[in-house]
Picture 1 (cartoon, rainbow, N blue to C red):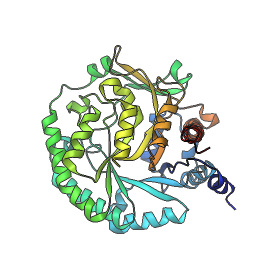
Picture 2 (picture 1 turned 60 degrees about the vertical axis):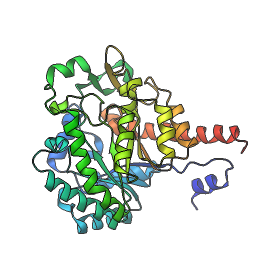
Picture 3 (picture 1 turned 90 degrees about the vertical axis):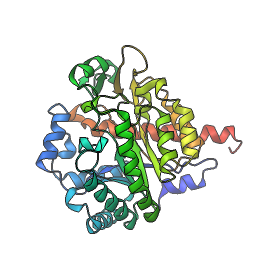
Length: 368
């Protein structure tokens, strides 16, 4: 008997259908991946990368009660047969697949942001990827229309309770990045061509695209203007692309941009009700790019400037039922689990916020 499921089914009041999920690697990481992660974590290799990483990670997710996963498909499996076999493998482990990302696109090949060389090959590959995902029963494909995530470093800071967190500082960023060489018109034109090609494939395949906001929403990374600088840019994209374009609602990106990006709580209401939110990245930050000194730090959920309970309550209130996960957690002591410990802490905190929101909304609506 699943006592947790039985308890939830018997409990009165509102019950959120949000799917707590996490990225799942389905084969052992390569030496290159391990080296990249070790460098990112300041030379400290997370324990999950030691030994049988994929098996350990599966157990770790199950022990946290996580039954839904996001996949990042490896290059060798980027075809119809590879995606189907991978989906079958992961489902055989007892996981549902919420969304899938592949290693092609503007994040991996910077000129694609503005329609540079390789655009046709990219569109051909991404259309195949979209149709293959649909054939494999995966409902959402992911994309980031940017050269990558821009930060200036990882440091132990007061706002992370002296854990290692990620930092962005506008003044430091401006000193080390190129002037903008490719403006927003170029970027939007390239994105329009992407939608013209991919949205009909989404319609045929029964798949939605989850578009991640620019992180941070501040143009200039690799000399390229940002596609998404405000929530109004999402509205422009949705109006242009139609119903199969949605978003990864990265709470951290909204907060990084501050009030200039948009009204987070009202945007959640609007975009959830419009069925545009397919994935939520649940992250808090301290500071924003809307006011001096134009600096922010990624924090634990309870250490940033936002009351994350208000965010969770808004998601529950308006019936968000898609995938949700913690995002960019600070690095705790490696000997005590590193980022895996802070991830587990974050999931527990998020589930507690969700249950509190369910109860409060149930009482407000006279259901308890």
